[in-house]
Length: 174
Image (cartoon, rainbow, N blue to C red; front, top):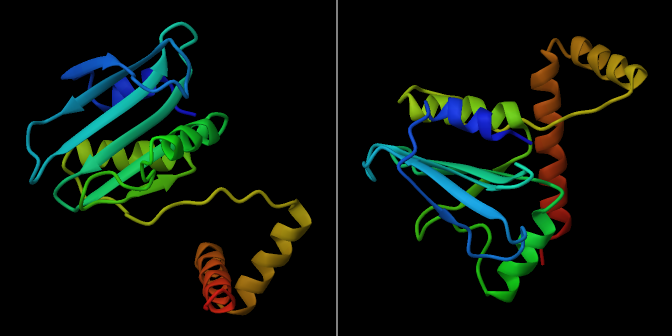
C-alpha cells in the first residue's frame, strides 16, 4: 500500500483540507487529507485516509473531473471492514459521485502514475494494471505462446483476460 509520503509527493504537498474520518471501519485514530484544485469541471481532487498513530494508509483516491474518472486504492487488509460498514450504512461502495463509479486499482504504481498525471493535467493510460505472479516455468510457457502468435506478452495477457471475462459473462447470463 502507498505511504503518506507517496501521497504527499504526488499532490506536490498541496493539502486543501483535512478532518477526522467518521467511519469506524478503520479504527479510532483515522484522519483524511485532501488536495483539490478548485475545479469540478476540468480539474482534480485527491484524498488519503490513514491512521494517525501507526501511519497505516487505508485508502487513497484521485478524481479526474475532466475525464469523469475516479480511481481508488483500498488497503486489502481493511477492504472487507470498509465494505461491511458501507453495507451497514446502505452505501454503494462503487459510487464515487452521482455520475462516477470508482475504478478500483490493485497496483500502487498504477495508482501513483495515474494520480500524478491527473494532478499535473497530463494524459495517462486509463487501462488498469493487474498484478500477475506466475512461476517461472508458466511465465516462459506463456511468453512462448505469445511469441508463436507474433504478439507482445502484455497484449497476449490482455487478450487472455478479456477472453476469460467474456466467457464468465456468457456463463452467468440469466
